[in-house]
Image (cartoon, rainbow, N blue to C red; front, side, top):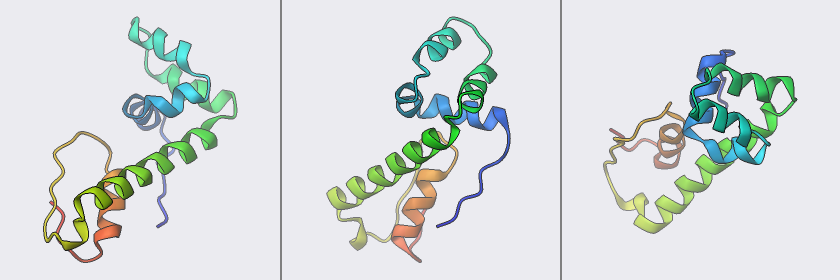
Length: 108
């Protein structure tokens, strides 16, 4: 699967806030703390870009999405299911991985 990411700091900052684990592993913990204390979220994206950590964060994050899909599909034996619904917040990456795993089955 090939995913093209928007070249947009707001998109990246939102992804960081959805997937803080990878951001913290990249050394961004203090920047996350600053955001929690009122800083603008754009500085989160700037941290990754200015420190050459964007690619590491994205690889870690996409891998974690895929691991969640594998864990979920193995636990629920989802291959036998006909429908699946997503009600969680997010930007659709997890949904894309599920859709690929389910092939032509319905995903709501």
